[in-house]
Image 1 (cartoon, rainbow, N blue to C red):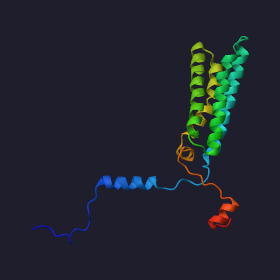
Image 2 (image 1 turned 60 degrees about the vertical axis):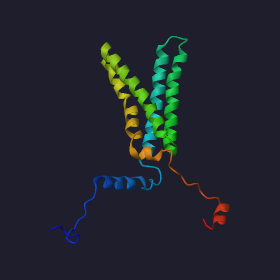
Image 3 (image 1 turned 60 degrees about the horizontal axis):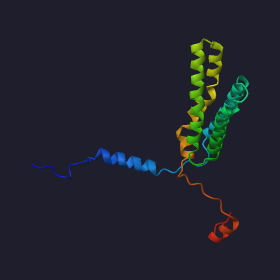
Image 4 (image 1 turned 120 degrees about the vertical axis):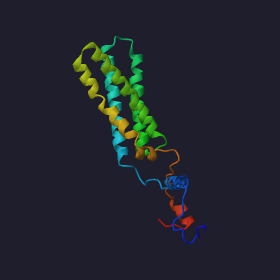
Length: 175
């Protein structure tokens, strides 16, 4: 005897339909309002990375013979990239987190190379200082790649323009 539909109490759902529904809900979630709490800290760590880049450039300049000044442009370019990334994250501009991540990753790799070089030479004091300078790039990377910062600086995030008084009167909205 076939079962009647009235006895059936639950309906079977496909797992794919449930996953598609949950992802659709995630896509339509409203973007967070205002600057995330971690954005100022990421910007400050970006400025710290810029200061460390300039400090490393000064140390390099002190140890180089005259005429090698053009090689110091790399240090200045890294510092400028870090300041630009910090400003982009602070303002919430598109892909600012990516600029800040690149600006922190390059000095991180440089400092790890310097620490490895001094470790191979047996200069433990310099290894300690190089590892201490890793605080800026590591902190910057840890904050810049987090989801609130990425959402704050995503390209499609719409920031509503404030209405001018004339436009508010025209649209019928009072300030």
